[in-house]
Picture: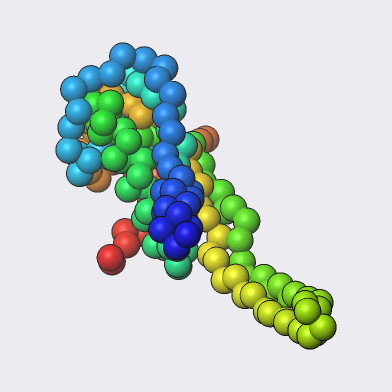
Length: 165
């Protein structure tokens, strides 16, 4: 019984952090995920779309920065599998979760003896972060210092702060 419950719990945890992709172009040979760059705007010089990727942070990932790091790493890993050297980030969203408390009570009788029971359950689960991106192949990737421009301006867009993790 305990083994069956443990197997179900493990399956649920694995399914909760699953990543899915839909091919929209020709796959290339796999590469190392560390070679995949995340773009928040289309890179200059064009690119080839390979797949659309959807992913989520794990069910026990705490902290907003850790959740963001988890979904970005999942996007990189999935893109690397299809040979993409970039991911054009489409967006992120927060899922449902949080703290909940349940209370239950019961009673009955058996063989002339009465019994009663009660219980309280508490669930503290973090909200899951979701991300969607397009796995792309960029023939001539821009230098690491490249930043997309703000539409209608000559100013570069603000790049996200690098994480210290």
